[in-house]
Length: 346
Ligand code: AVI
Image 1 (spheres, rainbow, N blue to C red):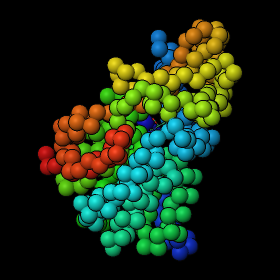
Image 2 (image 1 turned 90 degrees about the horizontal axis):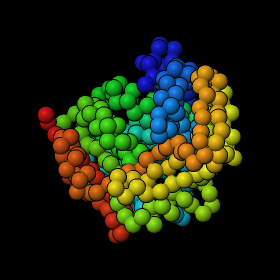
Image 3 (image 1 turned 135 degrees about the horizontal axis):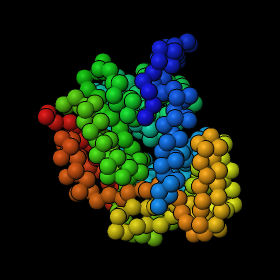
Image 4 (image 1 turned 180 degrees about the vertical axis):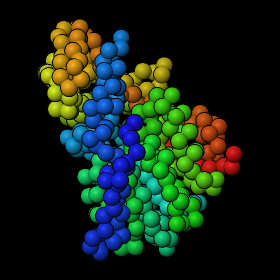
């Protein structure tokens, strides 16, 4: 994980009228993040019997654009299903939390957040939004758009990893805080990462604060596999783009034409697995990491897991974390769920 900010890596913007309601803090120093920490996990991942790379390497500028396109695909149901649930129930969420600061982990374009902001605004509540994202560009652009559309909104953005942001939370001026973790991003964590994530969440939240979680639920294999093997090939491009990203970031020579996208549902582990499949035996060099990797024909790199959850098990797990599920909303087909939890006293 990246180091804490040095004095010159933390600064605050406040210029024009919109800017007066916008504060952006940089907890992440991109120069520190590149060749040190990132490189180590790549070397580790590419030298294990099952090669793997962290899904965070999907998200360079091109990867973030491709992900936005994925969210619009007919086969990729999670985004529109979660948006439908929010459209139906955001007012209930706001009524249950009362006045609170909305903090969003991995805020991206903040599209679904608007449904929540509309609900809080509709109830006449003050609007304070804390988006957290590693991409300063997306965070700034979406915050400015929100500020233009919501004249009473205050935004305090954090350019940060989840970990750093949760470690550096300052008290909110509002009566409580709701941390939102939408889009089933939780599904991209393995169980160890998931446990670690929740220990950070429950350390950051005060008793009485809220946690709003969006999760993708278990369903028929063909629906799941179609969502990660779209007919337009956008998901394949998203997957292969990780190699392009590593090429420019670590002076690599991955030949994208030597790999195929592969995504399948592993029923016993209840997870989609995305791999990059080597079509023939060859070697790849990453100069910046002084690393040469050999691929045999048919060998794969695991680039992502996307776990699909059982609602009851998740409710039990959250309860064990001292996050009491207050309400669960789902769509008519039970494909996706939104859970509002409240932090209990220890
Ligand atoms: C970001 N995350 C929740 C997406 C998912 O469905 O696991 C990433 C993704 N990978 C391929 N398509 C979408």
